Image (cartoon, rainbow, N blue to C red; front, side, top):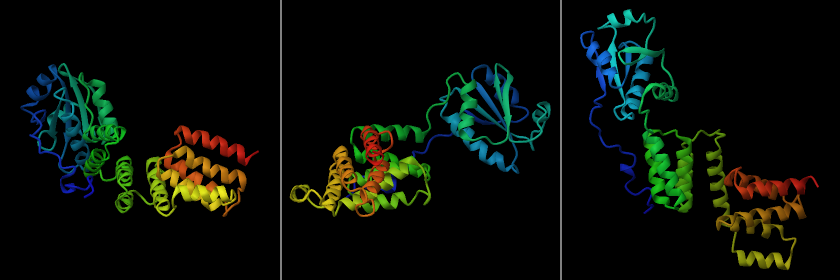
Amino acid sequence: MDPINENMSDAGAMPASAENAYVVDVTTESFMADVIDASQDRLVLLDLWAPWCGPCKQLTPMLEKLVGQANGAVQLAKMNIDEHPAVAQQLKVQSIPAVFAFKAGRPVDGFMGALPESELRAFIEKHADGGVGPSPVETLMEAAAMAMAENNIPDAGRAYADILSIEPTHLAAIAGLAQCHLALDNFDAAGQTLAMAPEVCNDPDILAARAALALAEKAQDAGDDGELLAAIEANPEDYQARFDLALVYHAAGRREDALEALLEIVARKRDWNEEAARKQLLELFDAYGAGDEVVVAARRKLSSVLFS
């Protein structure tokens, strides 16, 4: 059984957490205790909202999540202004959602409207002493990266799958999970995973994973390196053998050798098979990533060959 898919029905399941002790519903009567007094010990975010407010329904859950990650450094005080309008009137609130940051008993900052999570995080970190901890997705991405660095493909795959259970459109996780399936020669699962990304997508991680899948499928039928080397020795102009050898080298993880084999074709006969070697080089560049040292060197050599 594929170790990534094993027990996949449980992948990404987050343990049920207790209600956040630092998220409270505030009334006019409790405002002094829940906001003014509480802000003596920690940052308090006063979230003014109403049941009919659409943007409020987007903002409040993000605030709750970030407050939960602040490990007690922040309290969220939610006030329904339909039921308790006095504070909003005192603060001269013109529209909601409106959020005010209270420290040491007074408002020190605020904003109106629903902000993206990244801006909310920056707003909280600007005022909270302890800041905001990493999100579950960030923690899982770090775990996946560490597992990949240790070549622990199953654990990396499960971490990427957990991310996708939280955020199904996370492109880096889609690409990472696809690469894990490829490492286990599970091409069908890799293709199904990549189908989760938009058909037209310029994300470099997705492009690399798609290129890697295409190369892996080609390499399946490339042949044996010993036979291919013998064919090339017998006929140095057997460009198909050189092309297939590049795919075999790629499948074996011999990136530099794969690129060199294709560069040799371009140098000898650039227009062979409608410039198939040059096109395959570009596909390998996508698969390996623009920052890869062997790609940088190969690009330099390719430019030298093409423009010499």
